[in-house]
Length: 209
Image: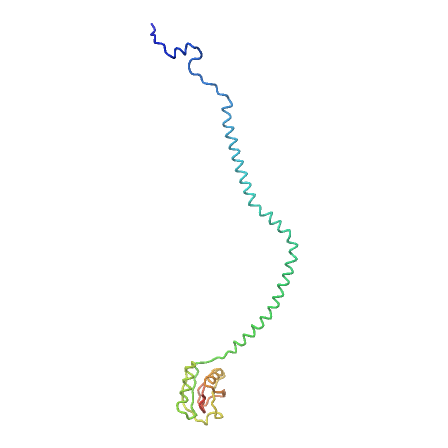
């Protein structure tokens, strides 16, 4: 004998009629196809946008090329102007050529500089009879930088023309002898030789100072 239970709310629902249990609503076919199509369209739009950006950026880098071709068109009109400027640039070069001539005139002056031999053998010979005169002149020459100076005496009869003279025996010492004469205030310079045999001799007939 089946066991009976007390009635509850489920028994009341069953008495009302209608489907009993759980039923799944049927799914339409397009709901399965639509998501992949939308995903494909979105991916396509993104790829197209990226391609457009890349294309525009590539064309932007090529923009300077047409600008160069445009600037080249006025060149024929400007070509006549540079030709005139080139002609004017030639004229200063011609004027600059005379400036080279003074530079050549400077070189002979450099060759004409005196050659002073500071270690030449120099004898200061006193023929004036003034005590210490030769030593005084020796000190003057040493102050001028001469390093081989000796003081001694000479007979006044051995001094040419009886005047203070700087004598030398070698033409290479001509500038040195003149420098000694200038330092001592002597006017006469003689290159025919020295009476005592030294390279340069200062013959004092009187006090040059």
